[in-house]
Length: 146
Ligand SMILES: Cc1cc2nc3c(=O)[nH]c(=O)nc-3n(C[C@H](O)[C@H](O)[C@H](O)COP(=O)(O)O)c2cc1C
Image (cartoon, rainbow, N blue to C red; front, side, top):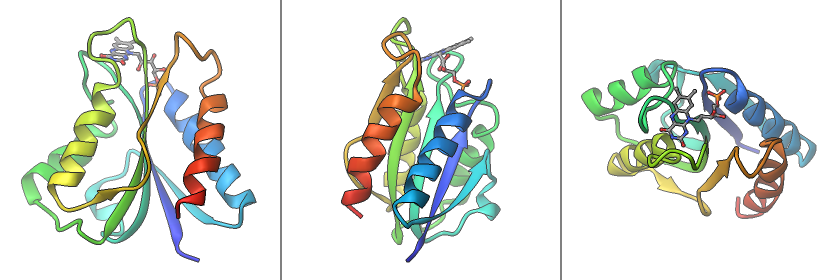
């Protein structure tokens, strides 16, 4: 079975923990996974299945460890037409720019030919003290689409 590449963007660790938890669930369902926290474009396979998990910082911005990847895609225009991906955001609805990072990254990936599988999950930390809980529920459904 193809490996699912989990890509996390995080400032204080929440999105990393969520990515790691989802990887465990996927492994339990017999998927193979690779987790990359804040990868560069060169670290990524430009085909196959990605699961992108990122929090939002600043005013709708990507975390510092994922901004270089976004910049590299915007500058180098890789062909991502052989990439399919799932999208998970973590943010706080107290901001007008709730989950802005995953929304903009998703648009960027789609602009370069990648296709999203399933609905985007947006986890609101004001509603979910433990973000792994909605992530676990979502990834179990998402994996059925693969
Ligand atoms: C300075 C700061 C700015 C933030 N800006 C946003 C924002 O614009 N939109 C949003 O949805 N959440 C925002 N958040 C909430 C974070 O996304 C949330 O705390 C998340 O759990 C952090 O996850 P991380 O530890 O993976 O970085 C902000 C948090 C901080 C501390």
